[in-house]
Image (cartoon, rainbow, N blue to C red; front, side):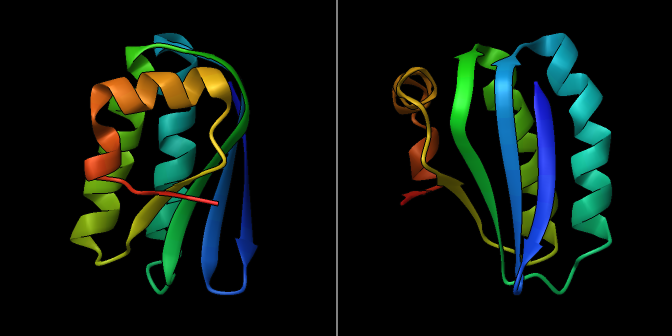
Length: 103
C-alpha cells in the first residue's frame, strides 16, 4: 500500500493505493496518524480507495484505528470511492455503520 495525503480546503484526503495487508498498513499507520494530529482543525477525513487492488482484515484495523484517533479529536471520517474489492470487504465487515461511504 502506498498512501498520499492531501489537504483540500478543510478536508484531509488520504489516497490509498495498491495492496493493503498487515505489513503495508503498519508502515502507513504512523504517517497517517501524524497527518491527522497536525491537522486537528480539519472538517473531515476521507479515505479514498478507488485504487485499492487487494485488501484483507488489515484494512479494517487500519481504518478503525484512524477512526478512533479522529473521533477523539472530533473529526468525522468517511470512505470515498472504494474499489470493488475494497467495497466488498468493507460491506461484509459492517464498517459502513461506523465510517460512512460517500461519493
